[in-house]
Image 1 (cartoon, one colour):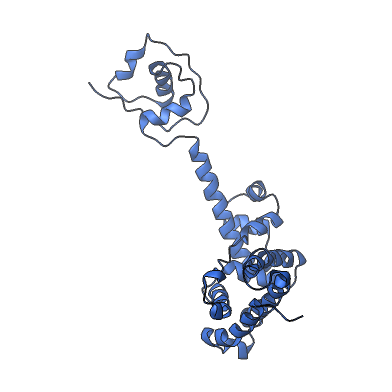
Image 2 (tube, one colour):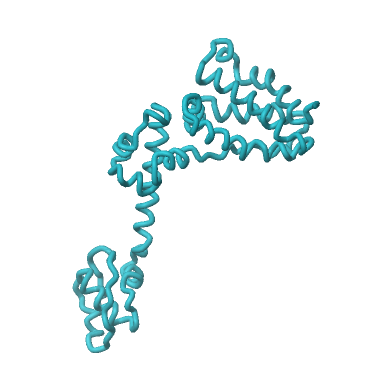
Length: 253
């Protein structure tokens, strides 16, 4: 007996059909059927199957229809974020526009507002990053400073993290971006520093570490001071590592 091969995409609208037994044999006809016919027959074959959208993909071997909009939504959101990061990196926060970002992502500007609410919301999502700091407790106590500097050079050095450069460039002229940049470091560096040394002065030590690392990043990657650019990563680690190492211990009051 020939098997039924329903034709057409999985339904995307809720359809309710009263089940019945009188036409159940119609399901075994040897010709393809349209989606609408398949929906009705499915409701007859499976008693009580009023949620045809849920049952239909199982019959035809398709992915459940309700998941498809979710996948499209994820893809759209990812495209917007990719376009936003590139635009923010090239123009900074103030000059980049929602309209330009939407054009880069090949979508309507209203979609950006739908997903992120505002330009500020989009920027916050675009620069939401994990510094992936090393676990200092699991490190040689005498090598913590060098390890931390090495990790930050991995973030900044080409190809590096474009999002971090976006934050750094934009923070110079925009208070809102400065706050976001501050939050990235405060939320991730302070907890790491709290794990070593005296927790009482951890905020001070964390702040001093940030001055060194951000000062290095500003001079090397934004201002591009020739003497700083001339240093190799290994030379920077050797020069700055001991200073960071001292800050990771208790700072004299």
